[in-house]
Length: 161
Image (cartoon, rainbow, N blue to C red):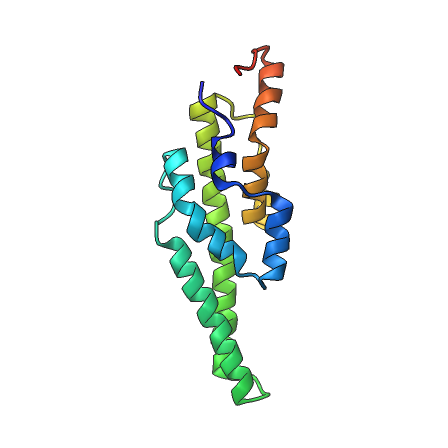
């Protein structure tokens, strides 16, 4: 039997550390995490659920939004076109992360079903996916072992060690 912790071991990310690193780095860490772990996720799940260069485009959109915001503030105290474009880019980066989270959610559920034959116990809330996005995906990856154990208890299977 496959190791249910393969993803968890490979990404090696605790949710609390992830949140704290996001706060400490001013929001840059999730983009770095995606850049480092996107290929690992798609390889292990055997599902190219999003383009390989997605983390790069996310960083470009976010960085450009931050840059234009800073330039807009430096130019004028009033709202300029640069501020408006920066707001659009910031909104776009938030949407990109949410889209990634929903695609990752679908891929993770398919992975659990195909590899470990459990779907209904790997319930991933669309609400939490929307609100917590990447953090919720990391949480679900870390919780897969306990969810599989619940599934095995419910369906009277013995866990293979």
